[in-house]
Image 1 (cartoon, rainbow, N blue to C red):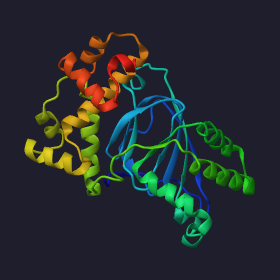
Image 2: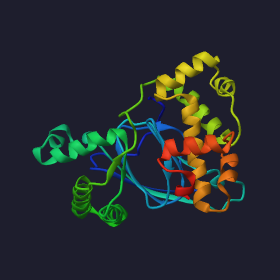
Image 3: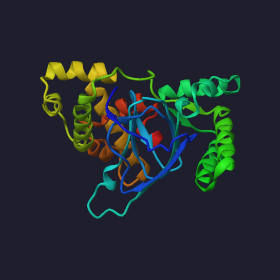
Amino acid sequence: MKVVDFRVPKIKKEAFRIQEDVGKFFYDQLHQHPEIQLMLILEGEGTLIAGDYVGRFGSGDLFVLGSGLPHVFRSDKKYYELGSKLRTKAVSIYFNEHYWGDSFWQLEELKLLRKFVARSAQALQITGKKKDSVAAMMCELKNKQGIDKLILFFSMLKELIQIKGATPLAVAPRANKIDSSEGKRMNAILSFTFRESHRKIYIKEAADVAHLSVEAFCRYFKVHTRKTYTAFLNEVRVSNACQLLIGKDYSISEVSAMSGFANLSNFNRIFKRVTGKSPSRYA
């Protein structure tokens, strides 16, 4: 899905780019870039969209996003509230085969890394015992220089490709491409959905945001996301519900209503279908 093309600042002939992002909320436009991205969430929580995946992210989570995979880390509403003192912080590492040269990338010694990178086309969430080790290396890389920096980088990659807990998130490697001019339209749909998901949304409202008829909008959304708009809306609502349930400040019936579900039975059914757990077990 060609959406907002995000350009990673790059120094000529560098092996990788490390970047620390600190702010009120994470970059909230659906975007893509040719680099593979390792992203460690140090502070912040919200909803991750990666290809056809919609789910929660929070502090301590580590993700690998493949080349060209459309994604956005959308911070929760509370980060956007006027006067909010909440902050987000993340460390990202970007690299791809073109940074190193095609001949180097095809070396036999990098065979396992190439396989791992191919898996990242579906987006991976890193879990397991070695995740903390990789996370520590990512943070330490900021303070390294010269060959020590390069050695630590490859040590981190070695640790990463040996991790068994690398869970694919998206069902398909990437959604169908759309023209770059469609990026604004898709981001408008996403912004509208996140903003209004707490209430009943009629398909015509979303279609109007996209400047399409209802029939054309339904086809458009299905083609470019491999899911219906209703299914996507429900996943966003479940993500919001997860945040509320973790806080334990509201009853399940209150969470259902606050997340935009019409009734409790519908909420319970959809929540279990999306998360694999009932709301009571999740909380």
